[in-house]
Length: 358
Image 1 (cartoon, rainbow, N blue to C red):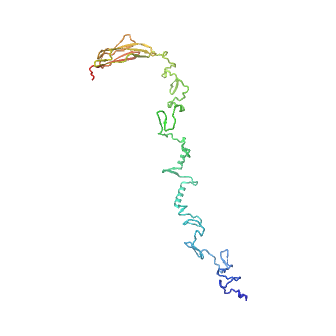
Image 2 (image 1 turned 135 degrees about the vertical axis):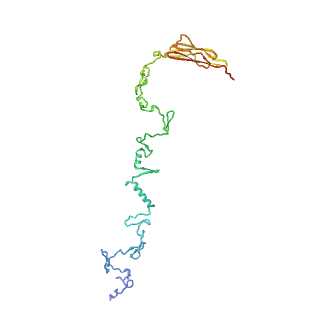
Image 3 (image 1 turned 90 degrees about the vertical axis):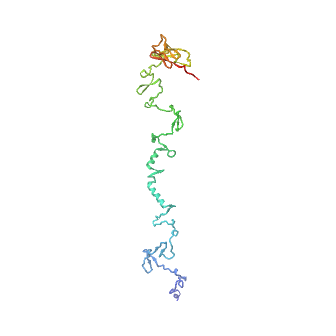
C-alpha cells in the first residue's frame, strides 16, 4: 500500500506537503516550472491568453510606483546611481541643464554673457564690434588703424615716421640765447653740424662755397659770382686796390686845429680868456696829400658881442661866407668851401655879466 504513504492528496504546503526527498515544502517553495514566457510576451500554461502589460504600472508624484508589487519605494538619485544637483531638470534625452546655477554662477549671468559673446565675437572667437576705454568706443577698424601707425607695440610704442603729421609741434622746446635747445635732449646746434646747401629761395647761395674766393655779388638776377665786384655791380672793378696808385683826385677832405668857439661872460669873467681865435683849415685829397689851407678868424668886439669873422687872403678855399657881427645869444656861422666840400665854423657869446651867485 505504498501509494498511500506517498500520496499528496489533501496535503497542505507548509504542513504535510513534501518533496520526493521527504522535505516539507512551504508556499514559497511551490513553483511551476512549466510556466514560461513566449516571444510574444504571453505566459504559457497559465490557463489564459492575457498578455503581460506595463501600462498598468504608473509613478506617483512622490516617486512611488502603482501596481509594482510590494517593496517598491520612491525613486532617488542615489538609488539610480545618478550624480546631479538637487533641483536640476533631468530629461530623458540627457539634455539636462542647471536652471538656477552653472558651476556656482547664476544661469541669468551665464545667459547674458553668452548673448554678449555672440554679439561681439565671430565663430573663431575674434572681436567683431569694438573696444571701449573711458566711455569711448573704438571700432575694430579704428583699433587696427592705430596699430598700423605705430612700431614696437610690445614695448614702447613709437609713431611711424610715415604717419607723423607735419603739424605736430612741441611747445615745450625753446631755443636759448647761445643757440642750444631746452626740452629737446642734449647737444648744441652748429652750422658745421647742419648738412646740405641752403637754396636761393631760402636766402642761401644755392651752391657750395668751398674753394670760392673774393667778394660774392649778384652777377645777374638770382645768380652769384665771386671775386672783384665790377663797377656795373657797385664795385670798383679793381682787383688790387692801393691808395697811392688809385687815389681819387676828386676826393677832398679837411681837418681843423680849433673847434667852434663859445665865450661866456659870467659876472665880468670871460671864458675863454682869449679874445680871438685863428682857425686853420687844412684841405686834403683822396690820398691824404695837402690841397692847401684856409685861415678864419673869429673874435670878440666887446665883452658881449662878436666882431665880423674874417678869412686870410690867398687861401686854398674856392669860396667862403663870413659870419656877421652878432650880439650875445646869437649864433655866428661861417662857411668855407673847397671842391664842393663845406667846412662850417660857429661862434657865440653868452652874456652872464648881470648874474649873481650866492
